[in-house]
Image 1 (cartoon, rainbow, N blue to C red):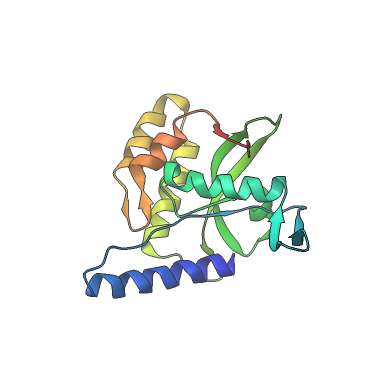
Image 2: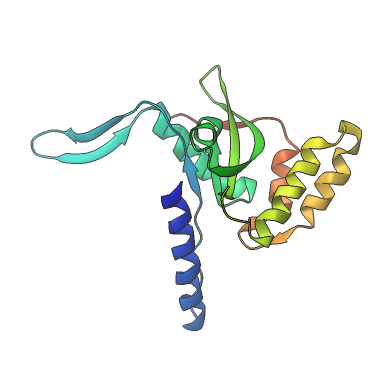
Length: 174
């Protein structure tokens, strides 16, 4: 998680330099999961490749893909959130894994617990808490507030749309 936040900070710095040079910004999302996987040199004597494979890796990859749909720069499984208690997380519901019988509870990580949240992340935290706390009949109002959220790295319209649909299917086909 620390590496993810360091890479995000480096991307912000890089994009500032790109802007000064008239170049377009780069944007990418992060998907994190934790669990068993196979890591190491794989292949034949003629073609070895260092790789990481398994359901754990596939789910992380699918979460990374879903950052676009959710409009947030990071998505993690609840297992990651529970394994990193020093970080502030906001739950975002569940994603169903196509071809599996389980759903994956997902979150976004807002920042470290021992530091104050940026204004952006505090606004996002409050908006997500409001969505989670309202009665179903008032959910539309809370989602509308989330749509109006204007934060760097957060697309409130996409996030509200993603939270307003049932569990998102993660395609696990190779």
